[in-house]
Every structure is written in structure tokens, then in C-alpha cells.
Image 1 (cartoon, helix red, strand yellow):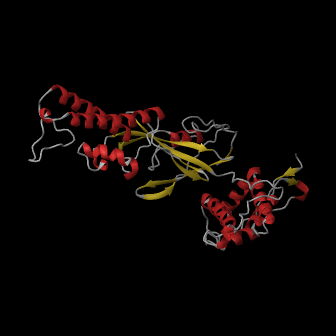
Image 2 (cartoon, one colour):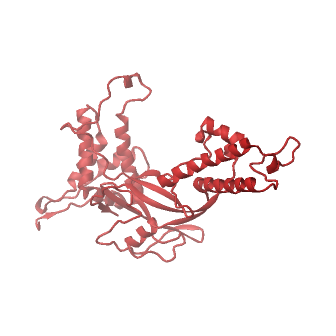
Image 3 (tube, rainbow, N blue to C red):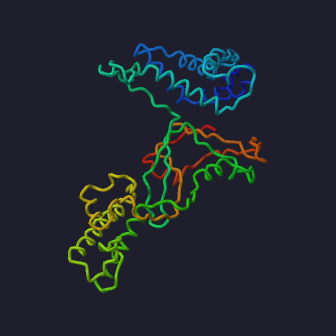
Length: 374
């Protein structure tokens, strides 16, 4: 190995950010295999993918080579192709490495999408061409793409709202707990723990607590109705003259209607308890069936959307729903100092090993060893 070394990159004029991205991509075997698979799939479909080909050649030139054959790599062709779509790669201006990385990925994806059929075209009626590589296998999955989920959990009933998911190319970490630049983190582990820490959100509507509260109110009112003759305002019922009806005026049918509403809501509550997830959208007009809306109407509620809601404190945290093969971190150095955005110049130590634990990876069925780039 002493006779093998890694080639250097020629600086095209303040392009050190660009060179750093290329060196990181060249160090990822998974990404090189992904680009090679895209080219093979394009050839199998008789499609040209020039940007992928130039990128593959540049990364191949950056692979370790015998020292006696070593030479510097000049990524001029790649830089020129990127400059066609943006001015950030033109001239002599320094740019952000993460922005350069994002643009390379967008350029690559744009080239792939250009070869997809137009959904408005009659050609879509023909048998679709599956994205296969030259050896007949399916096209490779991007090694950097993962899926995160935002989980909201009620602090009262411990029921969770359905997870909202987002695709990501990198996890964006910060250098300090707040954007004021104070008390910066010392290690990557600390920054990741801050990213995955729970966040308290006040005043979030909880549909499960709303139904539980409504059932409890109905139980109390039904009990009062059955045991006293004191006038009770139950679901806003009134006589034709506008006066509240008294319990002595209620018929067996009135009691039946209230009990029917109570049982209907109690069933919804039990379903929510058994699933652990509260997926009832009380703002959805289709939340209730026509028969259930009739039950509401017989109890004086014309529109169930108008019922009072219960709010509670929710805990929010991020979960890694589907991990990528290569997990990338983007360390955001931007902070606010005197209402001005500045880049924080501090040292962040990288851990030799980074253990991903719950709640970040709680829903991953199988988490294979990840390659990590920062």
C-alpha cells in the first residue's frame, strides 16, 4: 500500500468547496456503484446520460493509484457541465460545499428524469420500460436518500399522530443549541443528540382527548338526567320557546339518543386506544358516516366539525423511518449575531463510532451498518 496514493485535484479558482465534494463522493463505493448502474441502465434503454458519464470518469480518476502513475485531476469538464445550469460554478467565487453537493445531486436526478416518459403523452399507453441495468437487475437505489418521520405524541393520552415523512439527502445538524452562537457543541454526537431530542409543543389539538372528554361529559349528563329533575343543558337542546328542557320532559327516546351517541364515541375511543395511534381527523367532513351524522343531529349537533376541541402539550421528535446506505451530515455553521448571519468558526470533534439509538431508529425494522460522511 505504500506505493499507492490518492490523486489530487486541480483548483480551478476558489473551487476548493467543489473539490472537497468530489473527494467525498469518490470515497463512497456505494455512490460510484450507483452512478455506474445509472449509466448501464441508460445504455440498456438507448439513452444518453452525459453528466453521469463525466461524473463517473472524474470519480474514477480520483481512485487510489500507483504512486508512479499519479497525476492531478482537472475536473474542468464536470465544472463546465454544472455551469450550464447555474452561475455558482462560474468565475472565481467561493461557495458552500453543501450547496455544491445538492446541485450535483439535482443535476444527476434531472438527467435521469429527462428520460422518463411524459405522463400526458399517448406513449404511456404502451408497455412501460422498467429501469434495468445491463445484467438484467433493477436500477440501483440512490445510496444517500433516506426517509425521516416527524412523530407527535400527546403528553396526556400518549397517543401519537400519524407520522409525516420527508425524503432527505443529508441530516442537517447545528453547531449550537440555539441560533445565537452560544454554548457550541464539542462533538458530532452532541449535535446529533440535539437533533433527535424531544421538543415540547403547547396547544396542539388531540382528537383522542377530544372524544374522551366528550364521552366523559355525556356520562355525567346522562347520570344527572337519570337521577335528578334539575334542568340540564345537554347538547344545547331547547324547547320551541327557547327555554331549556328539564329532565322530566325527556322521553325514553331522548335517553336512547344520548346513549347511542355515547356508545358511538366510546367505540371510536376504544379503536384509538387499541391502535396506539390517533388517526381521527375531526376536520375531515368524511370522518363520520351518514348514519353517524344522523346520530349527531338527533342530539342537537348539526355539524360535528363544530364540536369543542381539547388541546394538550405534544412531544415532537425525529425518527429515521428508512435509513440510507450512506448517512450524510450537514453541519450548519450559520448563526445570528446582532441580527446578522455569520458563520461560526469552532471545532467540532468527530467520534470514531456513532451509535444510533431510539427514538431516532425506533421504527427501523433492520438497520444495517451505515457509512457516514460529514
